[in-house]
Length: 342
Ligand code: MG
Figure 1 (cartoon, rainbow, N blue to C red):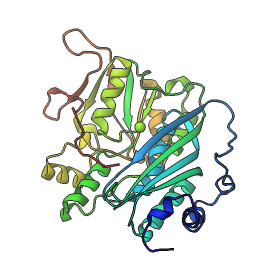
Figure 2: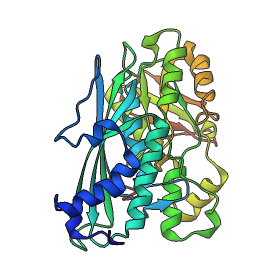
Figure 3: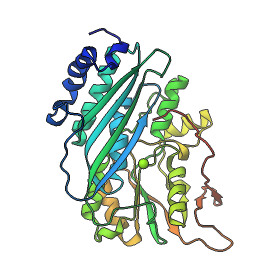
Figure 4: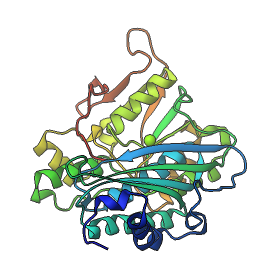
């Protein structure tokens, strides 16, 4: 094999076969994939959750992960947020001619390890190679399928007045890591992406909750961060969400990096955190379930859901109770604060 990706590797011919067997099968090895039929034959009982996402992050490798870990964790997490156990993934690669083979193999290894750890199988895939300059190194699409494991799947439409808002840990680490890499900021060298799969934490929550109906909303605050995700939930459920600024965990290094770059950590992407909305009487229980998971040690309550009140708040609004005592509107951004962070 050549040590860079050639156009022929996406041809479907012998060169493609070599790339498939010497790189993809070598790392993704499983029976379903190796059958090489036109589609994967899967067995799933009951309702399923399905989600798709494309990954275009730059740089391809960063502290705490890579485009490969994101392509698995991001899709696995979206499937899990519906109250599902992720089982299968498809993967589509669009590769720019000339990408070093070593980089492709490192990405594929990262994907294989992340999938193994998450106990999901990559069962079908596709590779296209485009001429130099027609895409930036590599883009990856993954689609995930999972089995719903609760009779009452959480949804952004189910937030209700009286719910508490719980987050699983510190905000903004992924977004700031990517920005620090791009800007070459050496003083934030201790910041790492939080890229991780979260379905184990979701299983913990669903298993330990007293009433299965109680898990109203689960969401991973990825692009647009905590502020955008809460706005989506408030709009979908036609409620007001009030969060307390001083209760939101933000690592010191993230805070420093953000003030240097003029970024708001509440709008920065996370790739290994979740938001959970449950009625207040379940809060302690759910908090413990989250804290029992290695990725939820710092889980904490940051706010509550209230009914919109005439003259004070409108349905769909998110209010931030500030550290100095006032309240301000935490609105949704018009566009993307940071492009290509996932
Ligand atoms: Mg999501």
